[in-house]
Amino acid sequence: MGNIRMDKYLADMGLGTRSEVKKLLKKGCVCVNGETEKKPERKVDPKKDQVTVDGVSVSYEEYEYYMLNKPQGVVSATEDRMQKTVLDCVDSKKRKDLFPVGRLDKDTEGLLLITNDGDLAHKLLAPGKHVDKVYFVRLAKPLEEDKVQLLENGVDIGEKALTLPAKIEICQEDRMACRITIREGKFHQIKRMFLAADNEVVFLKRLSMGTLELDETLVPGQYRVLTEEEIERLKTNAQ
Ligand code: URA
Image (cartoon, helix red, strand yellow):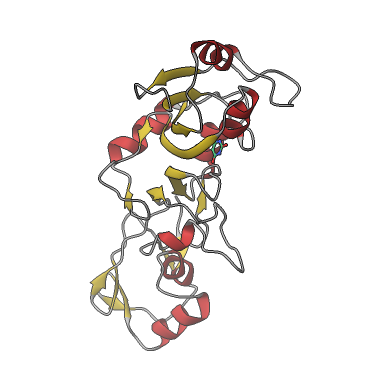
């Protein structure tokens, strides 16, 4: 990461728009290494220079990584004029270039990674990467053994090819709930797979994506920052 203009540094770290942070600078609220700095074009080294705003230290982070337990009723988009988006759920976000890594349907709950790290998103999402995604599914009818076999081997959901092999674990004695692991991410994939197996998804929740597992202490709508370890594992395993 090279040197960055002062106004970009402050705007990226959520202190306001470029014109708002220019006002902060003009007012003398910003110090670099203990000296008041008023020039928006001043270049700072995020690794070495100490930046404070009204005496509070502001360190620069190039990337943000959040895990959201997506609630139902929220759309997986960066903005929407009518509906609440997954980004609206993350109050403490600083950067304006955050996006959800993949989409969950409006009525799907569970793990959603929100970041501005485009390289990582690409590694997790690009077709051919085949990152495992695990979902918990409640069904309208019991899932019989022949349908488990069918879904695991691959079903016709109207795409060019059958779905890739999947793994199913039945979760309840009445066979009305299961965990399914898939390695693709086609539009409405899980719902379409169960429709192709003569059943219907009535509740869907994503539990994991690659090495990243939903933190079950997060109730739907809550989020947290990823740990360093979670970020490293994602980066090294999603190659
Ligand atoms: N499959 C679906 O059908 N919906 C989702 O939200 C995710 C996977």
